[in-house]
Length: 157
Image 1 (cartoon, rainbow, N blue to C red):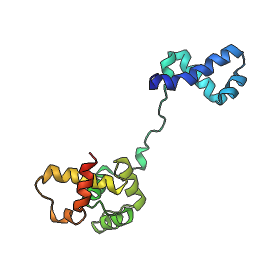
Image 2 (cartoon, helix red, strand yellow; image 1 turned 90 degrees about the vertical axis):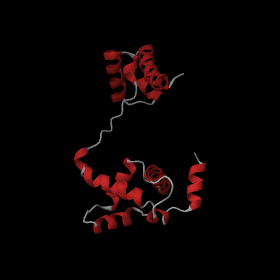
Image 3 (cartoon, rainbow, N blue to C red; image 1 turned 30 degrees about the vertical axis):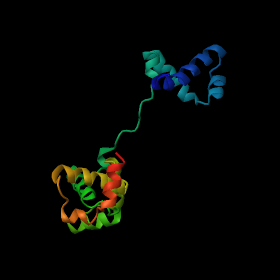
Image 4 (cartoon, rainbow, N blue to C red; image 1 turned 60 degrees about the vertical axis):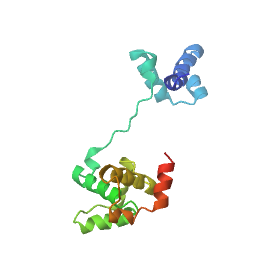
């Protein structure tokens, strides 16, 4: 059974059970769905068949709540440059560069770019370092990356 079939089967089962019982309320209670969900599934099924019942993500980013692209790029670059810094310290360091960003905003940017954890920021630093400086690490980067951390990172892949 494929993933798409796993997503479609319970919804299709609900529609068939309602048809078999002749009672929408009993069918949705047995299957654990709300009445709104039942009618939404029925409408999708009537419009496009089984494949319309595939899960559709409703979460769309609210772009007006995001920071500017330039500031986000600076925050990402700083996260890669100094992976050991947390949200508060990164926010304070960016403030010294006259870029005012709240610590939670830094966290949101890191989450969007998959840099939330120290290990992921470190991995991004190592990747970038090996891309630009293959034979050696820059001195400022050596302070935040220990030899054992590098070995552990490369052995994991």
